[in-house]
Length: 69
Image (cartoon, rainbow, N blue to C red; front, top):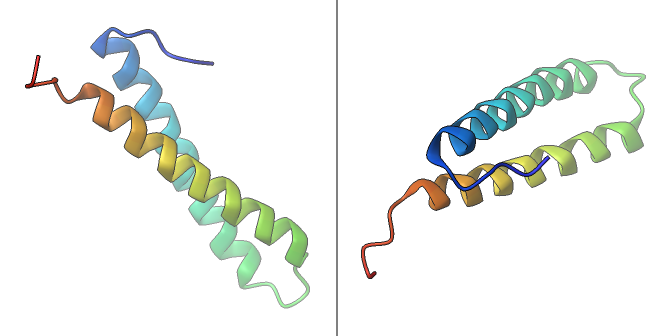
């Protein structure tokens, strides 16, 4: 779901992304500690976490006012 352009919507979306990022971090740590873990699943989770990090940075930048306008 894409947030609207209003700041409140962006903040809500950022909160959801950050929460998912934290949850993935915990899940990755738990899975990595298991010697019989599924490496493919672990790799996909790490890639998802990186995508979330990029999305968080993108939406944080959208919250910064454009001073050149």
